[in-house]
Length: 342
Image 1 (cartoon, rainbow, N blue to C red):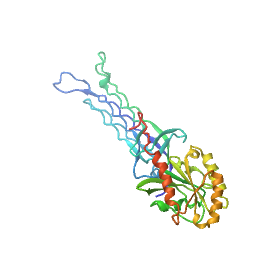
Image 2 (image 1 turned 60 degrees about the horizontal axis):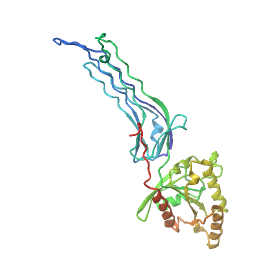
Image 3 (image 1 turned 135 degrees about the horizontal axis):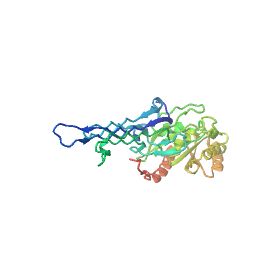
Image 4 (image 1 turned 90 degrees about the horizontal axis):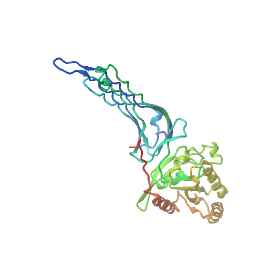
């Protein structure tokens, strides 16, 4: 399945049904009069976060969603049926923006959340509503009110507990494959990872979700390389695992490059708890380990963990460090309330 994390769609709620002009005329019935029913309300457009989805690919093939018009009213005071609703099903973590792609409408972070995007128009009154003492036989009824329409942007930010960041070929995908059942593409050339990936890691009987994103290079915030758009998928994480490859000539410089890109991107990434690890240490001898770990320590102000996803060295220690941060931050989900939330 192709990964798609942004889509523009057009939505329109249903128009209300028209009211009816009708009169009761029956033989042997002493009192007749107006009996036109009201029109039904138009269908609504809802957004719902569902389980089992991790991409917006469905919205590449359909971009127009229209709810049904309410049924018109009929005689004998029969009110028309409400128009059928339309529900857009999206993965948890989907944000909805107005057409300017900047104004946030809602953010669905929990499976089962529903938000009313467009309310159907009210049905029109039938002629029974217009009867007065001076107008016993009104011959007018209201049309239904029109529905709401708009263009919206859907933007997915993956829900994960921990995020992997680093330069290309820092060993992020190898680490993800080593600690989860995910099977990312792994190769010895830059930008092997082109789309974010998720995996579930288990340590000491507990689980947490890891998100892997394409590597960052200097100038990513200006569009260099793959750019920094995929950093949105680690915005919701509780902790970042920053991997610096032992193959780097200057690990300290590599660390500062990625930190500069995180700072330029903004959205609170630079303030997140960060666990630093020197990866791929299996290629180094003892002296080179000390030298490169020292370079990284000078740049970061703290000693890095040593990690080799290939041999397993340091893998469990890194997992436990991530799990400790995740466990402390869990169970703090705030479910929004309001008239359009259900």
